[in-house]
Length: 164
Image (tube, rainbow, N blue to C red; front, side, top):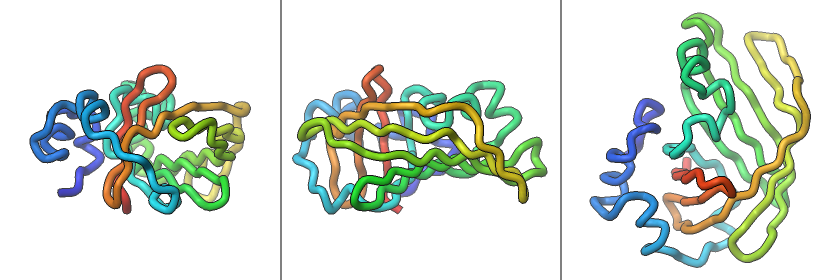
């Protein structure tokens, strides 16, 4: 079962998606698995985040979602240390666009990673606009297998990623 963009905010759907198991937070605690490095370097759909603005910032806020209808949220991890987060959207129902963050990944220990992102690049139609400054995130990888990756941000956000 693949989750669509509209399902991202539904914890119930995510709970069912992990095959009727406990809620995502419980799943993180009870189903930990040692991550395999080769499974991390690929493309992932962001199918759930407990805080909608964590992936995509203001573009995923309540007002942002009215103006920028999200089409997809993707995270690409490329060896040796590149992370690219992309939120694709349709602005005002007419203009296709995306926001891309690219950063460098650093393993802090066997579970925690840190990514320092360059300023975001907003693209609408043929126009690119780089704005803002660098940003930094820390994420604990709590579970990974051939289909899903679960993580918890340093501020408590829970993420579910599905391999593309």
